Every structure is written in C-alpha cells, then in structure tokens.
Image: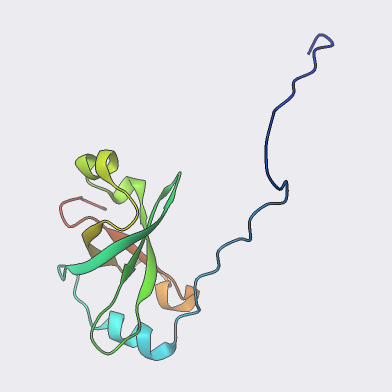
Length: 115
C-alpha cells in the first residue's frame, strides 16, 4: 500500500447486528408445498433484500408462511430494478434436488426461465 493508511468514519455501535434466522419449516408445511405443480403461481411479499437475490414470504393453504429465496438469476429483468421490501410479488416454487431434505424453498419469477 506504499505506507498509506485508510480510515473509515462510522457513528453508532460497532458491533454487527444479529444475523437473521428464518424459522425452521415443519414437515406439514413442506408437504403442503410439495402438492404444488411447476406452473402454480403463489402470492408473496418481499421481506429482505440481499446482493444475491430477495427473500419472499409465501404461503399455501394448510401451511404456515415460509421464506424462500428468489435468486437474482431467477428474476425477471424488470423486477431487479423496482423490487423493495414490502412489495407484493408473484412467484413459483422451484423443486430443486433435495429441496425437502435441505428444508428450504427456492423461487422464480413466473415469467423467468429458470432452466
């Protein structure tokens, strides 16, 4: 660095905020999602933004609401520019390998081509 020193000014507490942990899905919730077909569209709500995508809260009848990741590669191009927390959104479930064993759901925009 040629002997240079870089400083950053930050106000407020220096400790990191607690890491968010989504509630663990129950078997009955995963069974409800398992009944969905590849073309079924779900209503959801954007709950968190990340560099790699967005987290969407979705629910099917007979289950609690679950959070799923809508990866940026599975988003429609126009959605990337307008997405915000609290935004209602339509998604479909991606049944990727071992999704039930890993106990997490992945999502795609209805008009994207996730293949």
